[in-house]
Image (cartoon, rainbow over all chains, first blue to last red; front, side, top):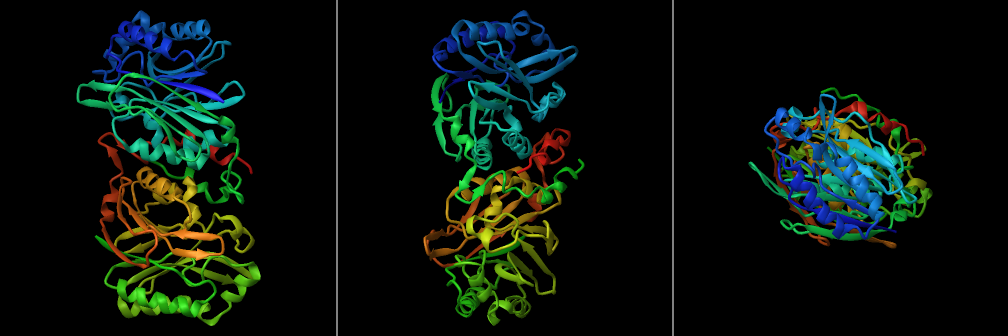
Length: 266
Length: 266
């Protein structure tokens, strides 16, 4: 079993010091768990004016030190953490998520599918679709708009993910229709941690949720409140891929029929 | 615009004469439409005892003549029809769907992903994932349990399907979670025609429905009644793949990240 703590909050655009203070408060509230999951871009806020604006935020000391900040909290409190964050690598920015754990295991995923104006700010993720480990379980990370691309959910399932962690800055209800379907089709849990608040013309819709391996929403936060929600999941249930007594959702695939998937050119 | 007529009914296992009579009644009720959609295995019923039982049904005259029966009705009434049916080809059985239209266009899809005991009766479909045309629109056919495999929905979207016709014998509510997600991810309509009734220990759940291109259920039949339901769809909406002003659901795919999809071996 794995005790998950989801943090839903309202980061302040560009004010990393403020955000890290707020995150600290919530991390303390959430620390009695195995894995804490924060939203996308938790340290920076979302709606940058342009790439220079985003870079100026990425260059602040507290933004640069976000990894160290999380790793220290993880070690000091014996809890693992996944958090979306603003990442600067050389001259490039990525919309990334970090994984830190008290035993020093470290992981990173860079968002592949960029939403709207993110295309003017970030490079698409170039680290592939790694899995990470916690206890005896494996998980993958996808970020927000990635939810719309069944290919990557499927790959993570086929590679053996027991659950997907999904830091988000969602603004529509589409994910509530699509994410549980990904859970059913791949037989794993999904933990979607969303933010709240408004930046410019964008309002984030909260409702952080956990989908079980059969697409049932087993935990859901409110639409417009900050807080921490605990949910215990049993990732061993994800190892059972028999959706009926006669159907294994992966072994029943017939990939000879799927080759056209890679034919389409944009 | 396309006027769809869904037929939801209770076929009688093994009694093709009875079924064709019943289907005739419903086809007449449905004929003032562009496309009539019947459930899976509409002419034969579902729960065969074994392959010999299924073959004995497939060999009856009314079962063999189902194509001719549908083609004649189509021509006489100037309406296109998709129907699931029991298909015998040489010594093999397929869980198939026919498409007939008044101008003589004919199409066939053989169910690829077989459910439970179907594996003891049918061969997996070997005709790939064809698209068919009606007016100026293109559509694909998937059958019932195929709904769980995102690969084939995606391929039909990438090939230009404006809608998917989905003859079914559904027994759980999972499809109601998964099918609208396929519609959103691929930006097309889905028409799911389900049967009702009980055969042995299986009860079929009705609730035939239509999902629009954004995953909204725009039409739904009751759980346990026979009948015809008309729904007008605008397949031109499926040509707009911009899910935001900055995101094209197909062109935003980054297939370099998807190659692992074909790696998994059962």
